[in-house]
Amino acid sequence: MTFPQLLLVAVYGLCLAFIFCYSLVQLHLTYLYWTRRRTLPEVIPDDSYAWPAVTVQLPLYNERYVVERLIDAVAALDYPRHLLQIQLLDDSTDDTSELIRQKMAHYAGIGLRLEHVRRPDRSGYKAGALQYGLQQATGEFIAIFDADFVPNTDFLKRTIPAFTNDRVGVVQTRWGHLNQGYSLLTRLQAFGLDAHFTIEQVGRNNGGHFINFNGTAGVWRKSCIVDAGGWQSDTLTEDLDLSYRAQLRGWHFRYLQDVTAPAELPAAMGALKSQQYRWTKGAAETARKHLGKVLRAPMPFTTRLHAIFHLLNSGIFVCVLLTALLSLPMLYLKHSVPGLELLFAMGSLLIVSLLALLAFYWTSIYQQTGSFKQTAQHFIPEFFLFLSLSMGMSLHNTVAVLEGYLGRKTPFIRTPKYNLQHRRDSWRQHTYTITSLHPVTLLEGLLTVYFGYGILVGFQLQDYGLLPFHVMLTLGFGSVFVYSLNHSRRA
Image (spheres, rainbow, N blue to C red):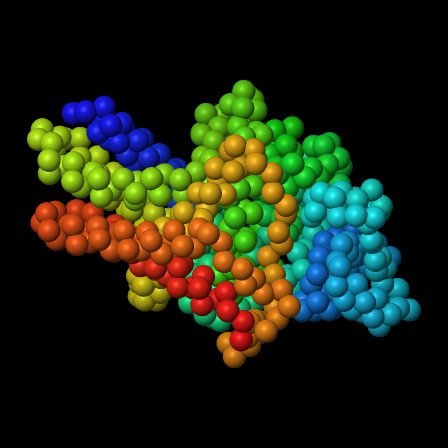
């Protein structure tokens, strides 16, 4: 075997090994979900409970379509008004600020403390806005909602009592979906997010491992934020960054699966890509910032292991992309170099990894339906399509991850929201529609052809082991390519 061939096999094997280990960690979270599935009794305070002061922070930047809905929802929160401070952290450059002023005038004179907070500049983006507001916050606890969220009226009365001791620094709740049924794209996003907010968050929390504040729909103890060093803008995921700084300092997080805060899912591929870019690159930046601290900090082995894969989870896209790209050369190599049968048996790791992911996502759907039949009806098509779309996003997300690992800084691009309530609602004519195409889109189209060719090669060589993999890759990259082209056009 030549050196280039040896190098190819080594890279392919390492990527398979990482995917395999990642899937085992997900399987362990599934195990923790079932075996330690304990629902902590909801704390229902009696009449003597002393409700603490709470500051609600609403970071806003050009949100003309959803800002009024958000203010109405927060104004309706069932909480003693003299203990409630609502900060509208407004960095907008459009008419969002005027809509805020009109809403504030509407609620004037009813004892609701609405504060319109404008900064001299937008430095630090969302993290900068939260930190700026924190300096003026009067609450002992800080609740945070992104602009597309619509919290239920009892949100604070169900989360604040969950701070059962002075070391609980965060209470995070589950995300719901306002427009899950809008399109296939929103259904598949909900499919993936529901797994995170059931298996991952519950599994880690019940296992005593690190979890993360998800950036919104949660409540912080103000002293925890201050103790952990405040909001910092050196990563695109300020929420994950602060979560790790706080937990490394010994603060405890609680996750309430039964408390849901619904929000709007991105309906356009450009918006989804923008969101995925920020999440994956920010996770890579946070890994670069905190992985060494996790390796050195005193903690149980399993907690350290889960923290490592939690921080490195965006790296799965790099491994998926490399495995996919190398699968065709490996197919030819398998049939041209004799004596490598045992080596190529490593490909079976993909099957084991797939089975682990099957259990992970099946559990997520099953806990919603409680029925084997209903779970199968939803799960079989959606899992196949979700996995294909995730593979199709691997090139776009790999670029983001590598930029994060290499320390290349880019601005915080917020995900546009359109207040889509019905399937007939259109986002195309809205102001914030992303119409520009990234050069990566062309490569996604070329990869569609590349993996389509891989299907033909499998038939030519009569080797069908990678055929399902290449079918999903072709479907995934083709879908992302077509969505990107179609959604870049205005109505």
